[in-house]
Image (cartoon, rainbow, N blue to C red; front, side, top):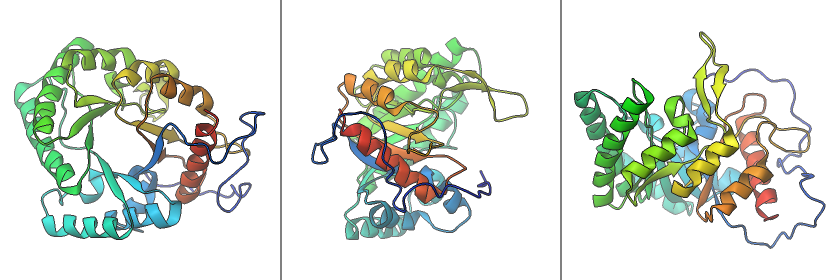
Length: 308
C-alpha cells in the first residue's frame, strides 16, 4: 500500500476546485444536495501507514483541512483500541472540539463472516462484536463488514446469511447497523450480494455500495483485474439495501472528472433509489497526493450533487 512517486498534477487549482463541464445548465450554489458528504479514513491510508498522522488526527484534519464534519473510521488504524476507553475518550474529545459526527467504522481483519466452517464463522462473529460496542461508544450508527469466505458461491452465500444474521442481531440490540461492502470475490457480484441481503432480511443489515470495488477476481500474481462486474449495474442492484454509499475515486482528468466512473450516471442511480444518507469520500489513487485527491472528490460530489 505504498504511494508511488509522482511528478505532475499541478493542473488543478490550489483548493482542487476545478470547473467541471458536467452540464450546460447554470448550477445553483445554494441548492441543497440530496445527500451529505462524509470522509472515509482510508482516503488517508498512505499517510497513516507511514505514520505521518494517527487515527486521533483524522477527525481534526477532516474538519480543518477538508471542511467535512462527518467521518468514517477504519479499524486497522486503531486496531488494539476497541475497548480502550481512555483512548476512545480522547478521540471523542477531539471530535467534540471540532464539531465532528462519528458515523461509521470499517472493519477488516476480524475473520470471514462468510466462512463455511462453523467454528471459524462463530469466531468471526465474536470478534466483530467488540467493534459493534466500540461504534456504540463513539456514537457511530454503523459498522461496515465483509461477506468473505471460501467455497462455492452458494456455500459462501449460505454462510454469509448466517454470519450476517448473527452479528446483525447483536448490532440491533445496540442500535447499530451492519453494512456489507462490495469488496472483492463474490461480494463484488451485485446479484450475489443483493441475494444475500434478501435472505438476511433485517432492518439494520444492509449494503455500502462502493463505486469502484467490482473486481471479482484478479490476474495471477498481479493486482490487475481479470473479471470485473459492471459497476453501474452493481450499484443499482445494491442500492435498495444501502444505508451508505462509498464514492471511490482513483484518477481525475484536467477538468476534475473521475476517469473510471461517470459520476453523473452513478449519482443518478443513487438518487433514483431515493437515497438520502451519507456519501463517503474514499480517494484511493496514486497519481494525485491524498489531500488533493480528497479535495477533488469533494468538489466533484458537490458539482454533481447540485445538478440533481
